[in-house]
Image 1 (cartoon, each protein chain N blue to C red):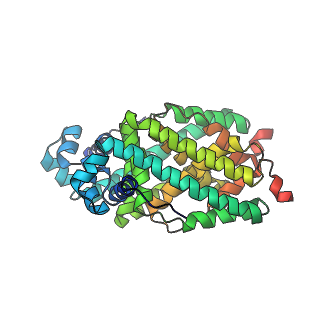
Image 2 (image 1 turned 30 degrees about the horizontal axis):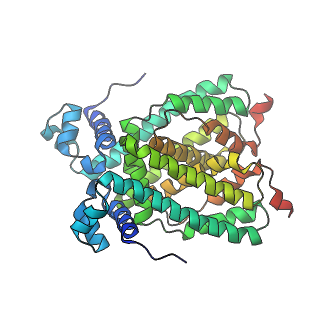
Length: 193
Length: 193
C-alpha cells in the first residue's frame, strides 16, 4: 500500500522522470511543472532551487526503495531456504524492478553529485540507506556478519544495474551468480535451516 | 609508453573531459573544439555527428584503460602471492586511478546510452572489454574459472567507483575486502604459490 502522495513528493518523482528522459541538462522548471501537471508558481513555491529539488528527490527515491526492498526481504525470509534460492529470488526481484526513467534519473543525479559537492551528503545518505537495507535483508536471510557484507552486495547490484542500463539488457541475469560468489565465503546459517 | 595521439584521439579525450565537467547536456561542438584547441571545422571534419563522437570516445577510453589494467596485472603477477595481497594491490591501484572529468565522462555516456539504443553496441563492447581484462588479470593471478568470476569483479568495481564518484570519496577503500569476499569461494591457486 502506497500512501497518497503529497504535491511535494509528486514533484520529486516527476523531476526524476524528466531527468531520466532528458538527462540532467534537460531538467527545466517548465518540464517538471508540465510532467507534474502543476503551475510554474507552485513548483517554485515548493522548491526554491534546483539543488534542493535534486537532493530531496534522491532521498525520497531511496527511502521508497528501501521500504520496497525490506518488504520483499521480509516475505523472502519466511519461505527461502539456502543461498542459491535467496540469490535466485533476488535476481527475479531485480528483473521485475523496471529500470525506467525514474531509476535512470537517480543514477544521473549520482553522477551530477560528482560535480556538485553540496550533493555529496545526500548521496552518502542514499548509499548508507542501501547498506542498511542490505544488512537487514542479509540478517533476515541468516547471513552472519551481515554489515560487513552489505556494502559489497550494494556495489555488486549497483554495478550490475549500471551495466544493464548502459547495454539495454532487459533483465538482471547473472546477478544471482555474483551474489552466490560473494556470499559463499560467509557463514550462511539459513542453508542448513 | 603512450603512443603519440592523433587529432581524432585528442578530440575524443577532450569530449570526455567536457562531458565530465558539464554533463552530457553541456556537450557542444564549441566546447569540445576549445578544449581540444582546434577549429570548429576540424572537429566536424573528424566527427560528423555527436553520436559518433560519443561512441568512439567510449571505445577509445576503454581500450586505453584495458591496456593500463593489463600492464598493472602483468607486473602484479610476478610479485603478488595470495588473495589478500592481490586485493590490496588492486585497491591501491584503483585509489591511484584518478576519478577525474574523463572517468566521470565515461559514466555519463553509459547513462546516456540508456536513452539512445544506438549506443548500446558500444556499451556492450566496453563491458565485454572489461570482462576480458578481468579474465586476463584473474588468470595471471592464478584464479581458476576466471571467466565465470570476471563479470562480477567488473560489477563490484563499477558499483564501488560509482559510489566513490557520487559521494566524493577520494580513495577506493573497501574494494579489497569486497574482492576477497568475491574470490574467497573460488579456487585460488596463487595462495599456495
